[in-house]
Image (cartoon, rainbow, N blue to C red; front, side, top):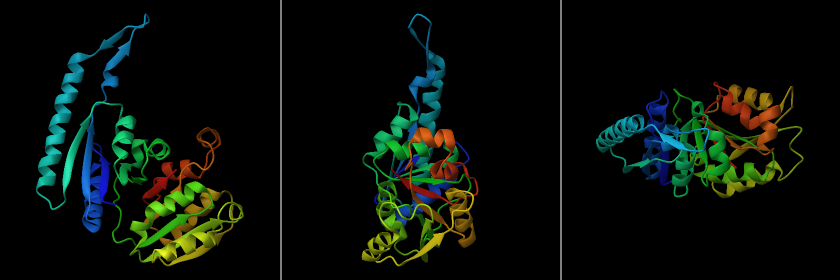
Length: 261
């Protein structure tokens, strides 16, 4: 994880994102990019006849404020020991992060941004979604991997290996109703072992739902990271009926989430 991209902003989660990214860059000899975005489309309205109206004064003020924010990030990071750059964009926020993520190994956002799910579906790199006031503990204590045997879970597992190496404890969690599909959990254990990661398998009864069973175990072991595939069911189905990904993205008590699709 040598190229780490973070969502830059003035929100309450910015401190946790920046601290986590800097710790990751130090531990992996990486480079940090802070992306400050001023989406021009927010300042454009369309009239009933199809014409576009640009709120020029508001846009100019926003650009000026975000230029100052980018400069402040640069001054802050220049005082530290992490290689960095500050990038700016005028694309819609999701598009800006997806495009910049094409040359990133990891994209860090806050769960409260509401962007993590869309980024997991559209970005070409994994996404680390943090609580607003919680950083990623390094080296990892207990890391949990939600395993349903699907391709999404496999991609998340592979991408998370650099974080899992050196963790105090790694647990692969399966729920009774999902363990018979896709790759068996023993394959996940073998893959990790080839990378020098010793993991234990925990099979859970489903209980009321898969997500509640996983959440209870994650809380019980005090996990500092949950690795999971994003949206193994369709996004529409999860929106209408709920699902594991949606549950953990909305669960304020969940640990940092490492997700990939």
